Image 1: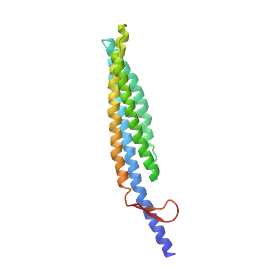
Image 2: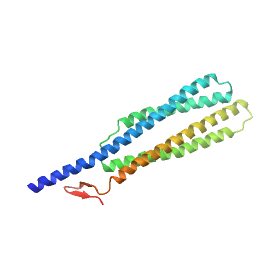
Image 3: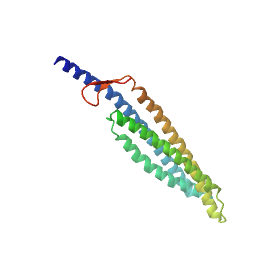
Image 4: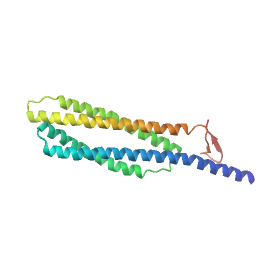
Length: 195
C-alpha cells in the first residue's frame, strides 16, 4: 500500500511538472499569435485609412488605382486579422505534448506557405506593372494595381517570414524542454524517462 501511494505521488508530480511547461509554452504561442494579428490589423487599418483618403483625392489615374487596390487588399487583411486575433485569444492552452507539437508545426507551416504565396502576389504585381496597353486608362490601372500588389505582397512577405522565424525560435523551447524529463506513462501506470 505504501508503494502504491508513493507511485501515485510520483505520477501526480510528473503530471504537474509536465503540464505546466506545456501550458506556459502554449500561452506564449497564443500571445505571439495575438500580437501578430494586432500587427496585421494595424497595417490594414492604416492602409485602409490613408489609401482611402488618397484614393478620394488622387490627382492621377495611376494613383487612384494604386490606392483603390490598397483599400481592397487591406479590407481582406482586416477580415483575416480580426477573426485571427479572436481565434488566438480563445485557443486551448491545455494541449498535451503531441497536440502542442502538432499545433506548433501547423503554425510554422502556415506562415511558410503564406510566404510562398506572397512571392506570387509580388510576381503578379510586377507583371501587371510591366503590362503594356494601348488604352491609356488600362495602362494606368495596370501600373497602379501592379505597384499596390508589389507593396502589399512585400509587406506580407516580410510579415509572414518574420512570423515564421518568431514561431520557429519559440518552437525551439519546446524541443529543448523534452530532453531528460520524467513523465507519467501514456500506456498505463508507470513512468517514462526521455533521454
